[in-house]
Length: 437
Image 1 (cartoon, rainbow, N blue to C red):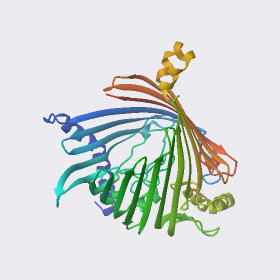
Image 2 (image 1 turned 180 degrees about the vertical axis):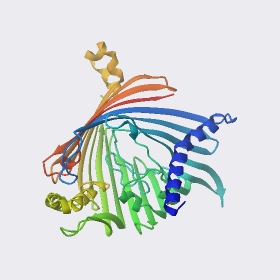
Image 3 (image 1 turned 90 degrees about the vertical axis):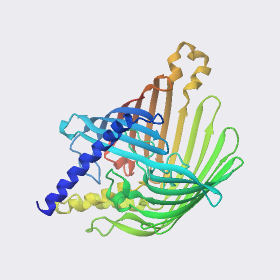
Image 4 (image 1 turned 90 degrees about the horizontal axis):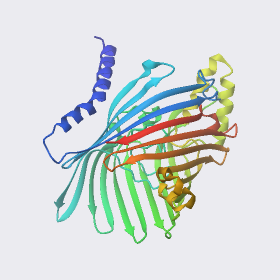
């Protein structure tokens, strides 16, 4: 077998083993004799219909809409000082266009050992393994998810993975000091070229403190991609109804797509000095209403002028067969963590228990398990908008078992020359069935 054949064979073997690793681990765990083993099983079934449109950057769509059915089995396991989270994800269980697209993957989301020892008279907590570290304080965007960025508020099935981690932490009454090493290459799922090139290894220090009704954290970190990072956050409770949260991040280097001349393809380049910041307020009422409003800025994204240039160059280059590949390269700007630099977000939800306080709802007892929510993402510079609505209903919940369904709709649009209006998906409708046993 030649070298290329060996690579193909190895890749097929790796995919096969990764799909069935979780199943094997669960069979072994289920038959373990230890009474300390705890398992939590969650499942989700998601049916979606997506309407597509022609766009300047991607071109004409081959299908006006697509339909698919996806599934997820999520298992959390705890045994003594070991904690694991495993997922079996099935993609395109049914697809109207091509039934052969079915794919199943076994994914280790987390698997780590956690313990505590005395070191020089100080109690030190240790974590070693694959861990999700989520230190962000925002709702729409969490810029302090430093090692593995997570898609926020996804309406479909999503599997998040941790990074390889070694962390030592010291706690006192009101604060925490942590020394941490991470390696984000432990991820099994294939990401975009930007995500793959941004895989990092680094070492850092984090300090968290709680003072009265406020908490803050500061993080310094150095890795082989960003070459230095400084970040922090502050959260304070203003009164019983209002909360304020802010966060900021600076990094010396970052990877981003760079536009060249009219006859040069867009390419991934290393840039200097990236800034991110977020400010938000959170309001909750005694009647069950919950509102979050946030603004965040990301200098790594293309500016409004750069996006308008991309649309103009894309339209010009796509008119000639010879330059169409160059036109498609401008679509790589859609892979940035934030599509635009300036972002506004509004969130509203109504707690299901609030319905019982309304007199007219006494004859509609099913409303006690119904919870609506609504998100609006705005791009103030170009007038783009993404509106997402969730309607959730809890059919039953016994504590150990539950079953619910969720209807989600998302509309992407706004001004014709906005980024959101030039995404290939026009609107998405999903029906999600969720449960645990």
